[in-house]
Structure formats: structure tokens, C-alpha cells
Image (cartoon, rainbow, N blue to C red; front, side):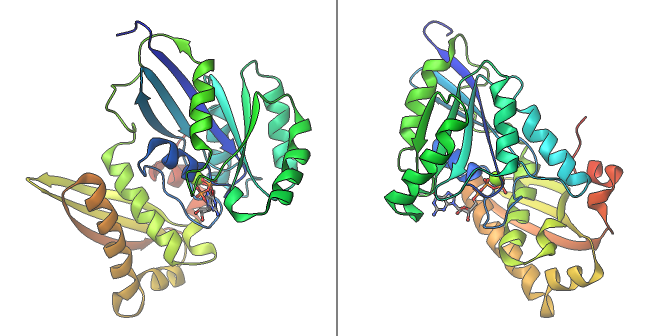
Length: 297
Ligand SMILES: Nc1nc2c(ncn2[C@@H]2O[C@H](COP(=O)(O)OP(=O)(O)OP(=O)(O)O)[C@@H](O)[C@H]2O)c(=O)[nH]1
Ligand SMILES: [Mg+2]
């Protein structure tokens, strides 16, 4: 098995909302990480595994690096930083048309101390003209000695194969770390709670989605039906009202969209029983955040 095979750990890091999770899903050819227009969508490090032609890529999608405003934010940024240790390659993702931010400059300072290749991935090239892309390359390239600068569109799957082809040259020979057919090491319950959270992120606005945590209380599998009871925690009574909606319409929509995605991902029928609860200021409480699965161990 280990003869001529290669394996590498690849950390995907950058500011919030630049398209890291979209890039992960694109490289895997399957959606395993939730995506939304709102920054700070990803909260934990997520492993996605791609095995092809004798090469195993273990990607670690991470929460966007930002200035934390609460305990949850501390946890998220820590999760992003700790993915660096143990990585063989870093994909530093930014978006076309943007200028290096303070957070990005600090990140680069960290990268400079490492002895592993760092690729600058400039995403969203479909959204800007060539001139702007050229400017972004000029602004970011001098920040450090990147292994390469690769402009891509994760949304349109443009240029993404170049990343896969280049980084495998940095992997060392050896056996695979995960089984060949494994796509992610996220437990099924986590995938379900994340899909529900994605629908809330997409359907609600402002502070509501950022203060939401989804906990799976029951998960039962029978023949071709998975039944789940999930509790959606939000921070205020008024948020609870919005998540439930008039005559329960919003909660119904959340459930309907989540069920569609889950049925296609798991390839079986799903029954979702959703409950909304209030847990005031949980994002500032270490204990509550831990209870919701945001735990640095
Ligand atoms: N036009 C365009 N939009 C993109 C591209 N990649 C991602 N997006 C959009 O950018 C937004 C953020 O995408 P995510 O993948 O959630 O970004 P992220 O970096 O994982 O964000 P956090 O998890 O919050 O750090 C979504 O609305 C995506 O559809 C791209 O190549 N082109
Ligand atoms: Mg993300």
C-alpha cells in the first residue's frame, strides 16, 4: 500500500468569507463544509480527504482569522492557528480585489517562521476584472516568498486543479492516513447540525445566525430513514421568535432546506424535529460554548 503512495496535510487559512470552505468543497468534489455569504461561517477545523492516483490530500478547512470579540471567536481563531502545526502545506486564501489587511499581515508573519511551503491562493477571479486581479497579485506577492501564486475561482472550479497538481509535489512518500474512500472525519451528527446551521445563516440576518448553535439531541437510523431531534440555541427571546417565524413558517423553511441537503448527502430519507431555545450570551461562556461542541480540549 505505501509503495509509491503519497500523503500530505494541507491547511486552508485566511480571512473570513474569502471562500475557503467553497474551495475545500470544490477540491473534494463534494460539499462537506457549509458556506454562506456571511463572515465567520466556519467555526471549527474540518478535515476533508481526497484520495486519487496514489495521492491522499488531507485538507483542514479553518475558521476565518479575525479579531475575536467573544469566547467563541477566541476558540475559532485558535482552531485556525493550531491547524498550522502538523501541516505539510499551507493554502493562504484571499480574494481578488482586496488589499492585505492587518490580520493577513499578522498571519504572514506566522507563516514566515514555518519551514513549509505556503501557496497564495487568490480566489473569486470570476467576480473581478483582470486589472484588479493584477493589482491583487502585486499587493500580496511581496509579503513573503510564496511557493506559488495561484488565481482561482472556487465557485466556477477554475484553476483549482493547478493547486492539486502542484501541492502533491510537497507531500512525502508513505501510506495513507485515512481509508481511501473516506471523505471527512466529521461525525454524522456534526454534518447534520452544520447543515441546519447553514440554513439559519442563509435565512436570517444580522446577529441572529452568529449567535446560533445547533445540538443534535437524538439521532436514530432505521432502514432508509434517519430521524433527528435537534435543538437550535439562540441568544435572545426576540431571536427565537424570528427563527420560529410567523406560524412557524421560518422554522419550517429551515427544516425543509436542511432535509433536502441531508437526503441528497446521506442518500436516505430524513425526518427532522427542530426545537428553538434561548441560552443568553453563550458565546461569552466557555462552559456553554464547550457544551455546544466548541471545545479546545
Ligand atoms: N464570486 C465568487 N464567490 C465565491 C467564490 N468562492 C466563494 N464565494 C462566495 O463567498 C462567500 C463565502 O464563502 P465561504 O466558502 O463560506 O467562505 P469562507 O472563507 O469559508 O468563510 P468563513 O468560514 O466565514 O471564514 C459565499 O457566498 C460563496 O458563495 C468564488 O470563487 N467566486
Ligand atoms: Mg468557511
